[in-house]
Amino acid sequence: MTASIQNSNKFQLIIQTNSPGELAAWARPLILTCRQDYPDCIITICLVPCQYATGNEASVARSIPGVHEVLTPKQTLLFLCGLHPSPKKADHGAVLCLGGDPIYTQALGFRCGFSRNIYTEHKNKPGWFFNNIFYKHIHGDLMKSRINHYQNQAVDKKQLLTHYHLPDRPYLLLFLGSRPQHFKAYGRFVLETLPLFLETQDTVDILIGIAPTITDDLVELLDLKSFGSRVHCIRGNSLDFMTIASCMVSLPGTNTAEAMYMHLPMATVLPLNRPDLLALDGLLGLMGSLPLLGGFIKRLALAYLRKKTRFVSLPNRIADKPMVPEWISVLDPQKFSDLLVRFVSNKQHLQTIKQDLQSLEHSQSVDQLIIKTIIQN
Image (tube, rainbow, N blue to C red; front, side, top):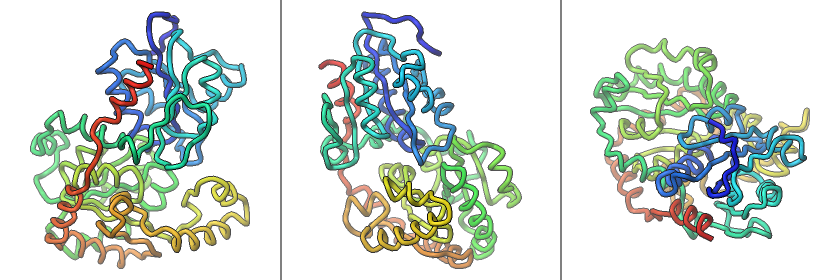
């Protein structure tokens, strides 16, 4: 639904974002809050180039209720070069960066004549000429706003089990990644692990959540349905799955933040079997994509980062201690199965993780702060 008529009496919010995590964890909850508090606000999403993008971000962005228009990365760049119609639909507005290079935010703001604002998880100043800068470590985590919206619905586990046609069993929740290349590689590895896990114990079943950026063709390639009644591969709300599950194992990313705020016992896994599939930021990311030398550069970078980075999961980084298990190594199916079995079988450890996650303090209203600040200024 594209708003085509410029309205001088309305306010337009242009959200810049780039990849699946930012769309789900930052853009969606903020848009929901904006629609609740300022229902007449015109909301536009401008996607920008990103090495972590899947190519399906535009369709996911269009599915968010309340979004009037979505520009693909190509359309955003063409607009900035004067080769695509302006997304500007009102005389008053703001550009808000929720992911992507801040230079695009500056350019969008200047081209539209709107204020320039940014929400960032980095502690350093993201650049000059911003009207407002919102820091995750100071003002709060937008991911928590997403959880608040969800929990306000008072979702019942039994209703969810009925909705997803699941038996009432303990479940280990697995996410195979939101990027196609990760999904295919990690998915094949999980396929080899699951028979060993299921043969070793008969108490806990498997629930696999499929990200919206993963196509049905990719899911069918893995043939996850061949495992019978103890493995369930489902599309749906990741928070629904976390409400159903007893525990979770996930690659580093948005899911670990969601599980932290949902107080779901979890472990983070980072198999180093395929370093070529790991995405790195900045110059290292560009160098790692070079033909021939790229793989070697990534291996050197990973060896350096493993020594420099103490933790990869968000709860451990916040607490600065090993609150949840991290499995970062070259893994084979038998080793991974053994880790999973020990993890799901140790109920006391799972309860300790849950209590530790509950002890973390989190900001509750950064979404309202951002919206109120940029609209009322």
